Image 1 (cartoon, rainbow, N blue to C red):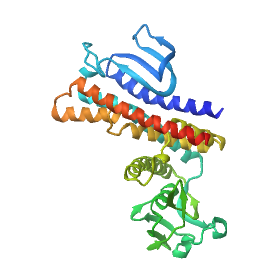
Image 2 (spheres, rainbow, N blue to C red):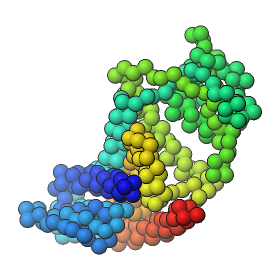
Image 3 (cartoon, rainbow, N blue to C red):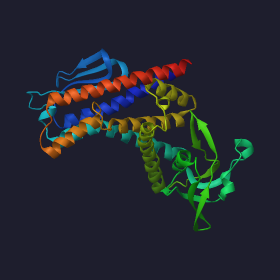
Length: 344
């Protein structure tokens, strides 16, 4: 059941991503040949007599595509992708990632409206007898009722941001700004630490009050929680490149499917939250300026916009092919790692 849920979720996220490309291409009157959910051999398909577009569901639920005339090679079709103005091609290329990110924001708004959202005001501390830590952030001067507004100089608005900043930077004493009795107070706080997957991180050892929900606070919290996911994605990439995290911390479709299955066991809230994280990450990752990803194509288009000269189609196709091979090689390594982790 949970495997089916994971496959359906991946299929849905791919569907809306490709639909973003599809609908903007249709609006720009680009000739579309195929719209496929999944990769590899086609399982079922339908060809529209009106438009000539072939709609397919393929065997491997790990991708999808919209095949447009003139997308990867020159075409004589007057409505081919390569014949359209640069701004239209940019919109079409960007649309897939945009739809994923928007879907993540919508899912996050659902969570903010109908589930508990933590504020940054301290409601109480977790006893060291329960946590097993030798220290408490209370020892550094934090008190019940303090509203934390900054961590290491960065503004925090909701509990998720607060917890993330402490996890990421709390291995060292942190400068924390609180509001106490209406006054701002700067404290140097030492947080407990723990190790996860060989990485030492800071730990938040208190619970917060609930966010008071108003139309404005719901909108603001949705934006803050969603933007945090975007930040986490970018900063995780930086941490991976810088060596803070190893490749063992990266998961592919198999590892993510296992996480989706686990989240589904605990109910709708964690499942929707993880789904929001995945779809926002999918959108952000697709915008990386890497050949074969949407971000790589956007980079080529921006270069064309500045230089007012299109990169030769054959050269662009070769660059994308090399990028695709590298991505596939990385995917295979991550797949082997995920499978080994599951069976070990």
